[in-house]
Image 1 (cartoon, helix red, strand yellow):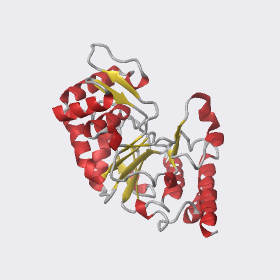
Image 2 (tube, rainbow, N blue to C red):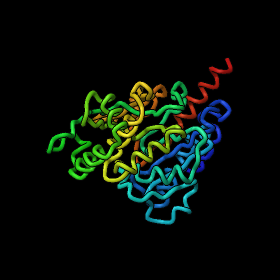
Image 3 (spheres, rainbow, N blue to C red):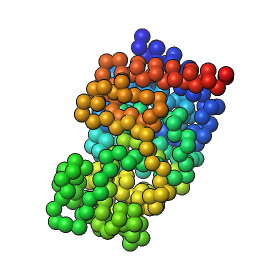
Image 4 (cartoon, helix red, strand yellow):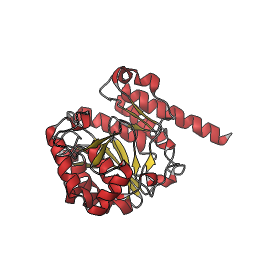
Length: 293
């Protein structure tokens, strides 16, 4: 019954594609950090599809399933080596090679809910990044930083090797953005956007340097993007909701349609999927009424 209700809502909720035509050339990638048993996974996919399909004509789900992913209801690209999403960049190139986007790729994790109607002021020809949780670390020394992005010695060593392998021009661009050499950013990376013309440069730098494997995406994504372009040519998610501590249990109170995104919302929590899908439907209806008046 729950799945039937979600499917019914998906036909009416959110905005129609005619109203959000600028998304027509964008592929939405939704990654599952932790794949569930088949029926639970199917239910989550149906809920997320209900949120996004009326706005995005092209949606790709990814993850590391322990079963035949072809049984899942929507397009799915099996991802290997992502380590529960920490290293999703390892399969980003595989996804973009299989699904071509005319305009670009918007990435989000399954527990990062995107209020896509808030994003239309962002430039689709630029990278989009979140500034939330940003820190910059000097990797010139022998020791590793202690912040959570760097807590794994393997990640720290991999980041140092990747930085050393950057081309001089890319290292110089990163230094200009970070205020000095040997400085690498780490930031929230559960949502980002890559315009199609910048996909090849991004993947090339990740692959040649080692940022593609062995470094978590919270370091890889901002580091490589900011090695390619000046920071003032990046669009920043300034109105995101990244919840920590006790706020995570209070997400229903904190959620607002004005937020660009909110993280995390776990669909394993009772009524979470129904709450979000219903909220999208109500908000979309109110926007429709405002438009008609």
